[in-house]
Length: 429
Image 1: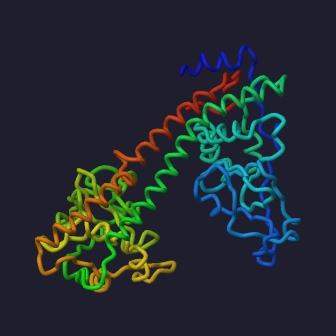
Image 2: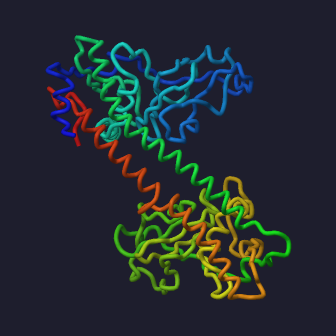
Image 3: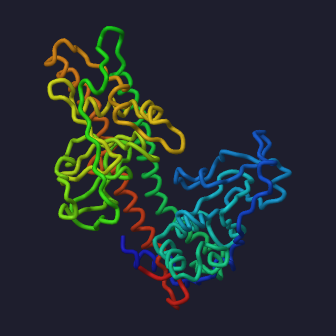
């Protein structure tokens, strides 16, 4: 698809007018009644109260909220209607969400309403999600003149309106752009739903394969069949952007080790021998403290890395414990491990407690060869499902990533309208 020729055909000679957002929509800051505790209710007649946690799924619509307030309290706030927008003004600057419920109040957000005569809501969603607009917000925030996404800044955002002199034709053009872009988002949504189903399937088979009847296995403390290595206290003031990568607790995502945001070190900065903290492909790691406590990560990079403090590495005893069997077992025990760490706001996992108190089922414990063969059989089945679910080089996550990039490419292409005055509009990047 040629973006220029398509847009020329779609516009069919009509112009595009850039309007300040505040001219075509009502932009307001959120407000909640005070004291809010007085008005929180669990009654079904309550008014939904949108907070940051209600948008954590990253979906297009906000269709339910964790809390409600009484109708009396809602009168002290601003009530939105279904189809209105909210914009994040702190975390994830400018991330748009469409209200998918009838009537709600919002706190700490900017709301956008009363735009339907000029703008198709889905057209507006795609535009606000575009890289041009996101970069525009960031350029304003980073300029030093403003510290957050305030209402005045949102009102000044330039919005492209095709064929402004003919509202009916304008909305038809917008609807056609939406139709094209929605084909990409619908496919991504289908793949995401399939991924969710596969995750449930994996958990079902994992729990089924790792559930044993009395007498089928011997339960051993993890420390009886596995060694453990704690990480090294690399100094944050010696972190480098290049060098040997360090695996920190933030790199462990619950199934793998993500080195997208990685710190490095130079061995010459340390007197200690750091080689014993080496991590190789296939190693199983665990976060020992912080918000990621108990999360497991299988290290799959071909590039070696090194264990940071509060990251542990499991070393199965050869001939007694299969590495991938251990991986799936640990994934099934993350809640148990988190409780062992104390839970709460500041969980902290002791390697001794982990190795002494976490029990591992060993099939055919009286026959090591037979035991390893059975462990491998179970691990191979679960590995196939795990690859489909978690692999970033193959399987559904990779397909979803590619479809998302395809959508973003065509979104930015289709929404790049001619600009008569570049200085007064969203800057291109």
